[in-house]
Image (tube, rainbow, N blue to C red):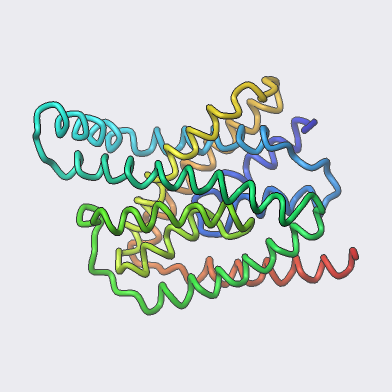
Length: 269
């Protein structure tokens, strides 16, 4: 059971790390492991994602209205628009990604097991490896494709990459989608925005799937509210930062955190 203080801290951690390419799952596992807290349940992990899901919905409220309207008009009135096209791209990218994520998550769980130290070592390795890949890809990639110009093929590749985050803890859903988007020469701000938009339906599905497992109480609402508020601030920060900045700082952070976790791992075995 998570108490209110831990729920507040974990909610802030979720809000800080869900949208940055640094892996929220890694950090949510890292804090209890380092400080000796009780390991958080899968249902509470998903509960924290409610806050960041609400952050995506609120921050991009106008975009979602346009997308849904465009998707509806494209089917009913055969009216083709950029919003309609992007809506169906997100739908087509989400369905196979969701199915593949469930399969890989079950396979990964059986292979890795329940040993927390082993999980943290794997997380440390994936933090470092993906940090290096993110840095190299971002540095070499061009920025020739904007959000509105994303193709169905690019959308599917970015969407399917989300499944790797389910298979390997520490990969980061936002990290892998932004990395793949940059590899496809999508500009940084558009890569981040599309990553956020793709996150909403798959997170919503996870919330609905675990709805009956939630324990609604003060810790639950504390975590949700904290992750929501911080999540909104982080979305705004990242989109503004990426107008001129690169992913380099996040890649370096991943490598440093990964190295620290490896150091801690060898002190605990």
